[in-house]
Length: 245
Image 1 (cartoon, rainbow, N blue to C red):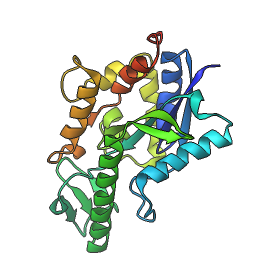
Image 2 (cartoon, one colour; image 1 turned 120 degrees about the vertical axis):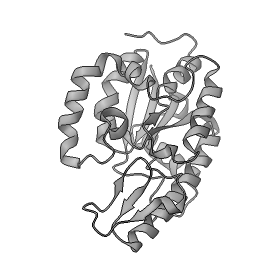
Image 3 (cartoon, one colour; image 1 turned 45 degrees about the vertical axis):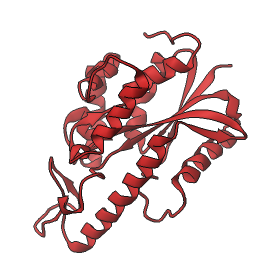
Image 4 (cartoon, rainbow, N blue to C red; image 1 turned 45 degrees about the horizontal axis):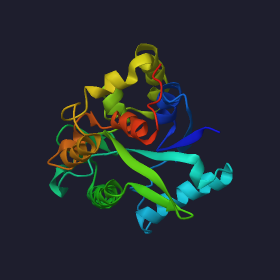
């Protein structure tokens, strides 16, 4: 039986972009995508410890699809940074703003003070949750440690893939199709250009540096990702590197 690579994502765009690519990349594993239809890291209604929240997501998925903890090779979690590490002053009110929320290279623009306060609270919660999950490298499910790592797209997936921070929902499907037509065979090569730092070196140190970088200044609004590091993570967990098609 193939080991399962469980990938937690925010929405269907991530599933459309990465499922086939990762399944082709890791032919000796079964890739599973767990779509949340939202961001569990920034949900202001959720007051629980984020470790418990994500742990429960994993448990629920395993139970629903009848997997045991030892069936899982790793859990990979994708999130958008959403500018969550900027200082409060970079959440700016513009009453003439046409959108309820707008990202640019230096700020997060909102239409009124109420929205500003909400975004500041969201940023605080999401930044705190990211720091917690980034520091942990496994989840214990029924006394079995499952490797876990969190990966980011900054400012968001749309920004990384087609250089637009504020893509409208109805525009995404067409953009996904165009992206896959052009880059499906070499998605990792495309993404490497947005990775901060060197490609050479110890994987764990590169991963750590990528998070330290994105937490500084206004880098969480820049066009960056550390997603390619998951390829190295999975290879290190397997007895032999997976074949690359």
